Image (cartoon, rainbow, N blue to C red; front, side, top):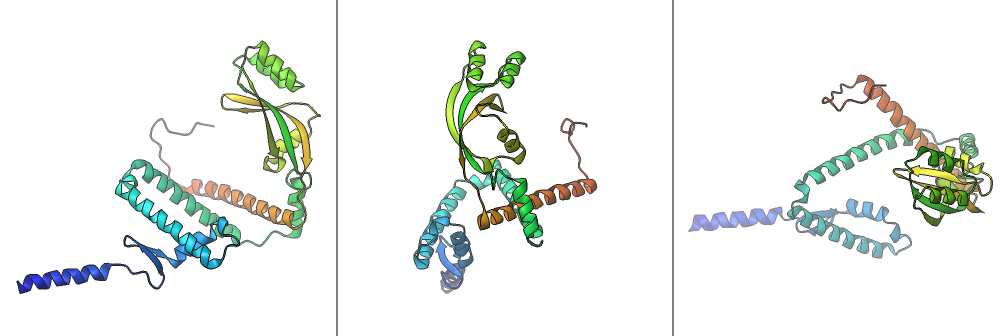
Length: 271
């Protein structure tokens, strides 16, 4: 009996010793899973809703969010979602993206900041984002891509949106009308340059998978970006371009030395 009591006491002490405590760098423990001060600070830094909130109140609010998150994650694990093939594949993809992002960020952030001349050159090369930025109001016609090549040619040659509607009606193609606004800063520079040259009322067609949208700009509202705001945006744009170039160059270099094998039928098409 004495031996059995001793073993139980040892087991109880072992369990007690393994229990985590909310002390030091551990700000909370949720079902024996720690939330650290670093985790809390990182969550607060990424929560824009806490801007201007009293720091003590913000910390308490963010900690409750983290606790709720931990509880949901723990339940998801109990339900076995972390063992599903879908989770494993998506987790692998997220890990890959994070590793690539960190590698690129380190390379780009260690480079010198863009010079004033580089920033000015970038602004001049992207007028739709800076000096000539506009918010456009578009009248649109949404329609499925016609199967008849002759109809497609007529649509591409149309001079007005009403002419587009007439061509579609004659071809018995159903369509819908819509109105939307678009910021010229959100458009690729090459596309912006083409659209900016259009005559008033001249339509442009944006094709997509299985459908297309004919558009006409009915209103242009100037919204230029200048000064410090423009310089900051230009610097970010230069950094983004540097990151894209770095990735392209790195992939090209790695492919030159990598050993890649394909299962029959999965090879890339020959050039």
